[in-house]
Length: 375
Ligand SMILES: *Cc1c(COP(=O)(O)O)cnc(C)c1O
Picture 1 (tube, rainbow, N blue to C red):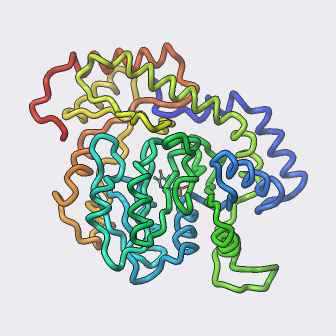
Picture 2: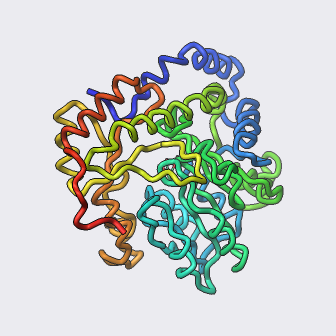
Picture 3: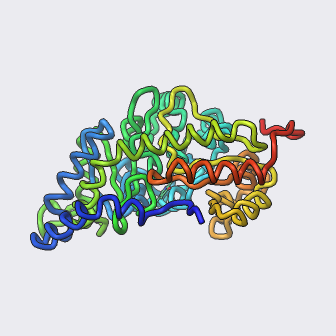
């Protein structure tokens, strides 16, 4: 069986380094924040071409705090995409604001700048583009809209470590950017973790307060804050893994290129890599009108797949409060019915890659003309 992701293979390849980092942290007893977290914040911010990194307990708490630091609160509207992990929308509601969901560009799966423009009202305060699957959203028109209307841009870069847009790193494209170090992300902790990066000194100061109980120094609380700190063990482990991330990212890109070659004649739609993007392939997503049948056929052939995401946020029972009916975000809804993620992780071998592609070619058959082409 070829899995969708294989965390054990990655751990086996760096076990000795991780063991050292854990032993050092236990000997130092620096369990919450501490020197490794501080160094990791600097190293990761530098990798994002940002001045400051503020480690947090998860990507979700990073998004929540970034919105609060940007001054988002009750009465504000925040524009984001319905085709994302629910955390993006949840964080907007945690900050007390109202999520406004703008449909995606079906070619890239990312928020459509024209839909963002149409969603702006006098109450709009921020835009949260998600760099879905590891490909940056089309940021120039989004940032231009934000500047024109006085809005804050918070990148949800949870899937986009080391991705680039027109030669610039994800994390340096808006006012603030949020990363997740959930274990299965391109840079994953041995547990939960996240980070906000920003080049704005005032935002960074406020974020450091907010993630640690709003305390200026111990027991002197100047704002109402949270317990959203990154653990010392995770900081030490993430420093080790960051040293390998560039190599792992290039391997993901090489696997994606190989899939493209091998699937060129199969009856599936390949993901579009925009000419201005360094796509980091957190997920390699094909599309098929017969997605569920294809998924079953691949499973029979020993290939695990994933669906990110089967339901757009506005059609989840938990988000019925958004009041958006089926059919209201057609591109996101169609993507949910058609996307299929193939195995993608840096340790995937060339032979496994070929096995996956052969199974897809057999299961999908040769390319036929699409009677209902995606727009
Ligand atoms: C993973 C993810 C998050 C949330 O990160 P956690 O660390 O799991 O809290 C937010 N947005 C997107 C797009 C994600 O993929």
